[in-house]
Length: 184
Image 1 (cartoon, rainbow, N blue to C red):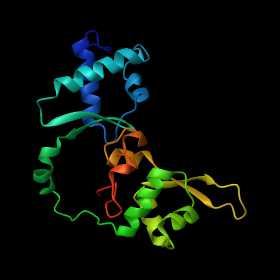
Image 2 (image 1 turned 60 degrees about the vertical axis):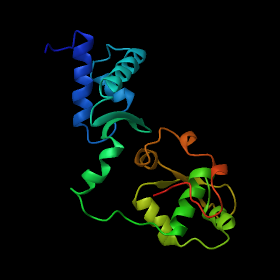
Image 3 (image 1 turned 30 degrees about the vertical axis):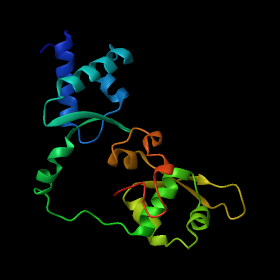
Image 4 (image 1 turned 180 degrees about the vertical axis):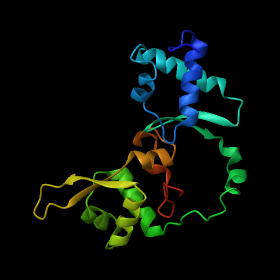
């Protein structure tokens, strides 16, 4: 291959190599740098759509998440791939899931807001657990006495749930009092 890809096929191969070897999702800006600024965003999006289509019958799929684009195994292979890493996934308490759901659907919120909605005090361990997982973060302080921290979800939260934005969360009306919008 030349110093710069010349054909559509070569450009898609460059994108494919970058996406398959990236440890994290790649944003459009990162992908544009592959072509030394010689590509329009619209062209890049078209190439990504073509690449996604090219992989439709494969075991991996090209997916757009909040942080950018990534290849991932199709969902039907998850049970098999889980055997490679037999560690039990971290379990979250009902209180942690309720807290995360409140933050996701009502952000930005303070700890007091969460307590008001849930009707019970929030254990600081739950907030710390969600922050350590990098699913929530402090995004500011409310301009009231005491200046409580405002919490919101992160791009990592969206990436882990395969979402591009909060708008892709299921509507809250779809859930009863005993169901949680985040089946984690």
